Length: 183
Image 1 (tube, rainbow, N blue to C red):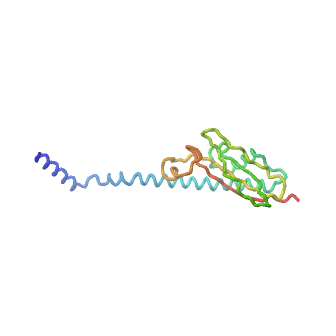
Image 2 (image 1 turned 90 degrees about the vertical axis):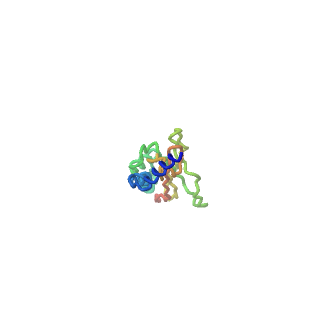
Image 3 (image 1 turned 135 degrees about the horizontal axis):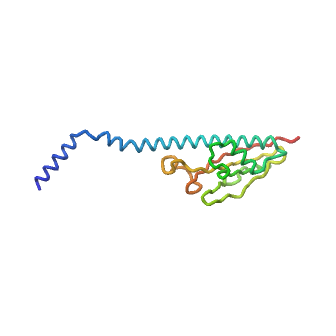
C-alpha cells in the first residue's frame, strides 16, 4: 500500500512541475466564451439591422398613407409596400401583421391594446385591424409586427429574446401620423 502511495505522490509531483498542456486548458476555458460573444454580437447586429429596416418600411408606408388620403391602399397593398422596403424580413408576407387604427382626437385614447403578431408554428393569423385611412386630417396609428427565427436560438441574445411562439421572436414598429387634408 505504501509503495502505491509513493508512486502516486511522485506522479502528482511530476504533473505539478510539468507545463505542457496549459495552453489547451486556456483554450478550453476561453473558446466557448469567445464563441458566445461572437454569436451574441452577430445576433445583436442582425436584430438592429432588421429593426432599422422595419422602421424604414413603416415610414415609407406611412408616407403613402399620409399623402393619398382619398385613395388609401388596401391591407394587401400595404403589406406589399412594407415587404418591398423591408428587404431583410425573410418570408415577409407570412411574417408581418399590419394594424391601422384611428385615434379619437376628443379623448386622445392612444392605447389600442396589445400588438398581435402572427404565430407561424400554429398557422394562426390574428384578426386584421385595418381601418383604411380614408378622408383627410385624421390622426392614425400604424403598428407593424414581424416575427423572426433567431440565428442562434440557444446562445447569448437569441436565448434572451422574448418569444411569441416556441421558435419566433417579435419585432414591433409603430408610427402615429396625420393624413393630409383633402381641401
